[in-house]
Length: 40
Image (cartoon, rainbow, N blue to C red):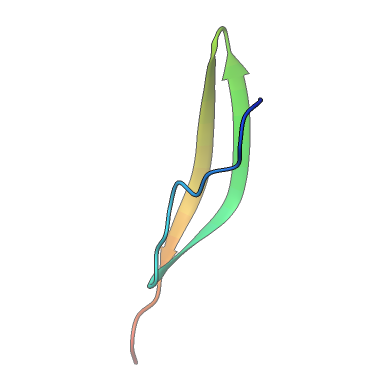
């Protein structure tokens, strides 16, 4: 991967966990878990 770093997600109430980047052929895939925050 080359080029400048970019934010691809700017969330306030959700958190991203366990990111994994996979390359398949000429494409990259980002897999992750989104966790939301709830009020109790």
